[in-house]
Length: 355
Image 1: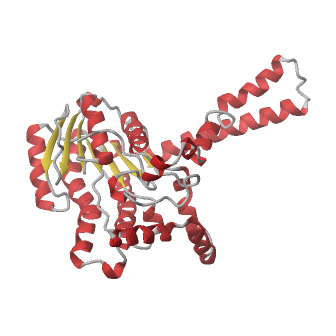
Image 2: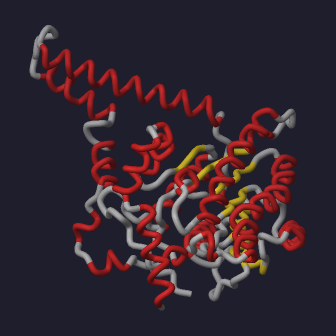
Image 3: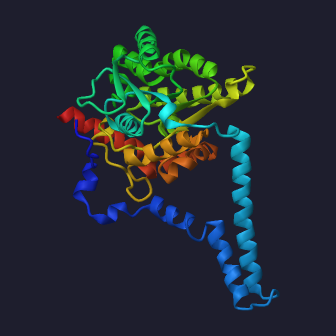
């Protein structure tokens, strides 16, 4: 299997300007005028020019830099309260289980960690077509509890006790509710939701005994939104978000001495540039750009390597989607219509039926 990143159809047909979007602007601002270190350069430069302390420009620049510094410190304190202190991570000593690791985001994560010396177990019904360093493949339907139990036993014998679990497996039918067959609905929930229960119940006890671990839940921003022609998929993703928060609460309230050293990471990305949503045209390449798997992988690896818990929402708009539910119902409907969320999936479904 080629590891060359797949480009969306829109990216192939359009020019360089498709990469200019709100996320790029926010990233540039976060490293410049919105960064506390950069902000303090302004009053320091003014002082170097012997600007009087009573001058308005110096006072405003100090106030602005102080505000950014206070917000930065507050965010650090908030993160520590929410997720606790980080755990020590030595990648070469970690045993990582990745579901849905035969392609897309899962394969990318498996290859990165395999090359870095970690022992990686991939659980998937599709086999990886190439041998990769550090990766061991286990043919497993993660929606089947008995198969997960068998794979877990084999992993413990072959590699040892897993300390990092990345639940990434997912499927999409992309059909209206009335066109979904009963077996399709059942398979959706087995793969997209029940698989997380199967893997966590099999691997979390070992992490608690080992004294440390990290569990990554790959959900979707659609779990907050719902979408036409994705009722089964979005229901499962909403369930994942609730399950993840419940898991956090159980670990926080647990009397087990190692529970506080089990870190949890929740990912709620927007549209990923993977075969799962092939053919879906993003409503706005500027406000809602398609997320490349490598970008999401970088964020996951960053948190896991740091031994931290947290939440990852890409692109920028995904961070603010939960606030949409605070708006009046009528305004929510207007926002949905303007975003093109439901019409995009309908267009995708229409194209699939015509093929």
